[in-house]
Length: 336
Image (cartoon, rainbow, N blue to C red; front, side):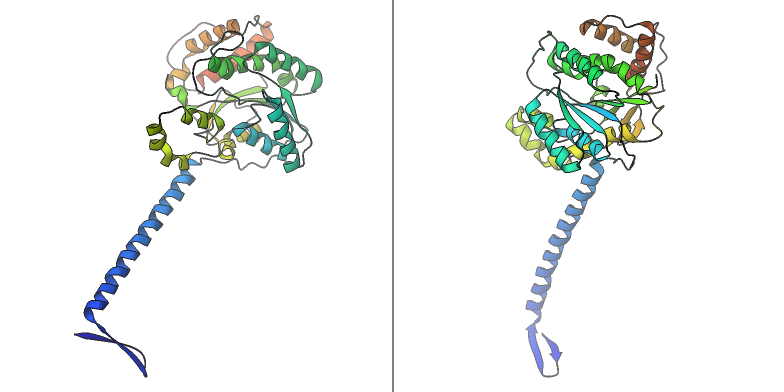
């Protein structure tokens, strides 16, 4: 049996049924492959969009406002600085590596047209450096509207700071704790002002000045690269396909930017934000007694005398509220 394919009255092609069937089978296989690739590509794009999280859609300007960003020389801090500079803020990059910080500041000034991007040395692994930075801010800056506690020590072998503190706790918590208290007077004078602590969902494992914590998501930063490089080869190969799902620094900065600029957050404090919205903190993060113990220990570890009552009361309310992270409180009583 044969099929005759006629294209016009003067031309025809005679094909055996077997050849025609083979052609259809080949075409069908190719269509299945193309459809499968298309579905896989679409799924990856949807997954990438989902993992990128929320974005700050607020267009509020920051003209006349001063912002300090720790760790502003790279990653999330750099992208936060870029966005706030574009909005007109005076941005102070508080960096341990001044050379790198100056390069970034130059890049941001050229890219945003905002010449008010400056660098000041700050080593959060040194209590002396933190005190020097705070003193310089009080003498040089007329105001402080936003403090973004963004810097963090990378995960790695155990190290200690020059003050004998474990490096990650020394930088990520104790250093920012002391810095916030020393800058609080400037923040209060510029009220309504904001303190934003870049935190993490990892916590689930274990005053006119608002204080909120943000979870940036899983972001491809220097810290993440350092963590991955320390893993065995088989672990790196295992997680390699998931690199596509990590947020870029710009995407990771969106919740920080939201908390820094969004109108209506002037009186929102003690909250935990993720993807530009308030989410509930873990139960362990709502324990008042744990917050009180951490407060007292932190004062001792950073060698800070108990502040005057007015200062102590305002700071204590903000910090204990932040430790709870949510209006939902555990049924537990603790005397402050």
